[in-house]
Length: 275
Image 1 (tube, helix red, strand yellow):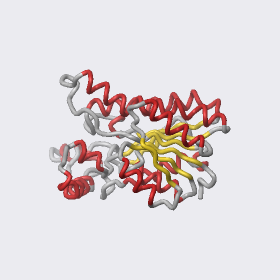
Image 2 (spheres, one colour; image 1 turned 90 degrees about the vertical axis):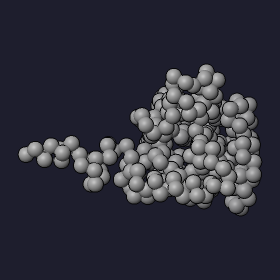
Image 3 (cartoon, rainbow, N blue to C red; image 1 turned 45 degrees about the horizontal axis):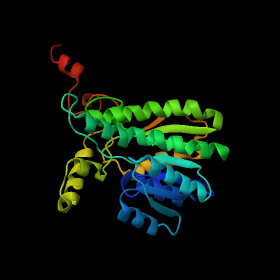
Image 4 (cartoon, rainbow, N blue to C red; image 1 turned 30 degrees about the horizontal axis):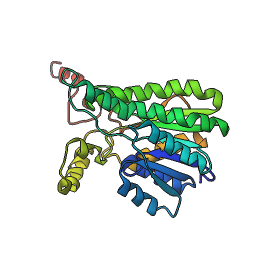
């Protein structure tokens, strides 16, 4: 019960990583306010929590919505923890094809929303003596080939913003860190691919099977894997950790596939044929 008598805000809490994290925090004693544009999903999460989770509609593209969500949590007793998680795949076009409008929309959804979440929560946390913030970045912040350009750029911004915010807010006893998910099987992939609703289950199953072969850990990543990491970073167990990130990727960023897949010969194995 690491979050007894504590209150948390989770954006994007109606599904996926946000939902799993809200449930994890509530299970460990927190009172949680989740924000999302998915009202049906948000209400469903709240209804399963025995009153530990409340839902408020929040479009993180709208600054007033973010401010209202955080102020609602503060009015209900305060904000001790914030998980800036809401997002989607964003624009898919390459840099030489993307429109200015799609670029701006993706940055607003994935980066500006995180900055504003920190902006509105920090003064309220400072007034309570401190707090903890975690922001969702991505393995695409660390290298190419994981996600589209606009998304990856925004997630790299989230990673660096987390460090800068940690420096800015240390004076107020507020810790700021990022979590970096790898290949986690959530609906972000099927939404990104415009999969029809009646094919979602089959598509998610195919994605999970593919993910099990994409990294050294031989299973698909789950929302609960990220929720466990976020709960740790928000808890007092991580009280000496700020301005960094926790990589939860099943080892996908270890190195090239040859470094961990015995079925693919590496460079030195190939050279051995000439000995």
